[in-house]
Image (cartoon, rainbow, N blue to C red; front, side, top):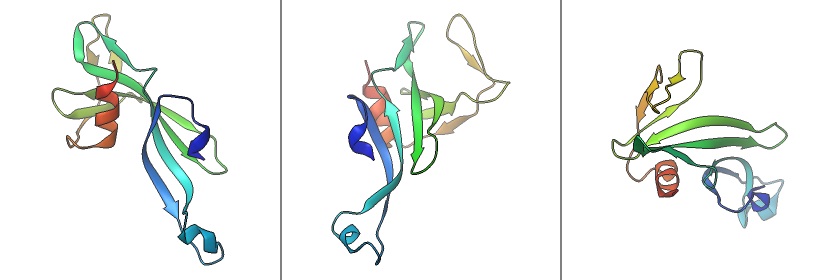
Length: 117
């Protein structure tokens, strides 16, 4: 499932399934869901260089992919999903109405997004 992703897309989480009716899955588990970040598509605003906006792709077998615009604040260790009618991005790049969530420094999403240049 993840071997057909475009170059530069980083898989940050995957759900691997093993089951007795698929004995090979104990050797190589089946990936039935994953989360990825479109690193080449990352955007930064000059007024807020520590923040990076990326597309987070939620993929699952037999389902249509869902893309969530997300901003990672690399300096403050937090992220906000840009969902809902209350989220606004001003011309100067300031974000309002978003719910910021604390993220660990070793979070794969934070690492992938903040490495994007």
